[in-house]
Length: 349
Length: 197
Image 1 (cartoon, each protein chain N blue to C red):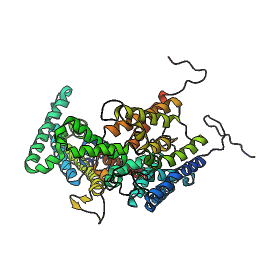
Image 2: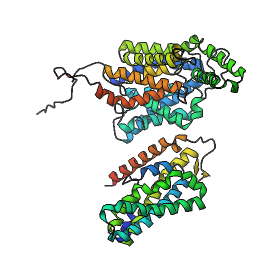
Image 3: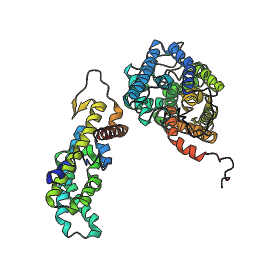
């Protein structure tokens, strides 16, 4: 006699054609324009870095699942996306072992040690980046390759300055002048002023990606292209990106200048650095972001505040990765705080 | 338990760091190099053995209500001896260990052994217990420091042990490296124990 098995599971009981692997591969596809752009701007070595990061991420996932006797699920594409995002957060001229070690750390200690996909409290790719940044800071912060088609005109690329880095250095000079005018040579002040005015004039370069930086973060246009696709498919929604970018814009406008309040340049701060990549592709990671709309708004605002604090006050020129990692840790609390009242349940006191 | 058993239990079975998870603050802080680990281990073992002996000797007439302050005074005496001798004979090590030498006074391994063992056992057993726990602590520090120093600095006990072109993994000698290492070592040990059981 055939025995019928009834599976009892928690709600929701909706059926959908979407699956993890379909979503993940489409996310990977949406990241493709930026990857192709990286190879165009930074040369073939960028493709090499991406290749090693992806191979190591997929390989580590398969090896760990095999060793632990779990079904090997690398074909769902989640490790592929992790490797891709990690590579996008690295300089194009990284030595080949850097993405490999980063990917092994990201998958091994960022994801599989917690139980695999869906159990990781933090974004594995960003964890990999944070690990590499703490371990080999020189490799992760020196950008030697000048992007194809020129950088922001007249600014020396050999010093390895990203736009944010240069802005920070120049603003430090201007602040120094205010405190102690006699100490700073006039030539340095003129140089800093010139740098800032050139940076604030380079929206075109920033938008198309002709600036120094990590290989996948520079081209705002290509990233937005992929993000638009994800928004159209509704794999991400606008709450986190809008609140995140909006907070950064508002706070940098208020505090980002050297001549008092509301003298900053919000558009520059939004276009420069890894904000677009972070806000659309990493802060919105389904596993590590809040599930309720209210929580998502709070998550985005929190990311924005931490990013601006690091950019304007902290030691690093860029704070996107740390801000998302820190806010990832608050997600369980945000989800509890933003829990909607059950239909028919008592109103909140 | 035999007298020898009191000694050997501290090495693996009741290792103060890995099994009892005591004294983690100095463990994480000074395990960034093998030299520091050895220095700290020796200092701890000395204090542990001496305070165990004294506590065991006076256990008959220590008033129960004020035993903790009395133990602390005993421990602090030996810590002062270690602190001043180290400052006199090994100033570099003393500087490297910094605040963690005086902090041995409030180390929970030592107070824990005084309270849980030496205060209710004979002198010989307390001596063996102190030796075993001190050795266990030193070994734990050595294990962590070996991983951290070789990976994070490319050296072992200050001697280079790396290939040409090796670039040290700085995170390992920074605080996050301590947490990563102890987590992985603890996980491996638990996995091993469960597999054997």
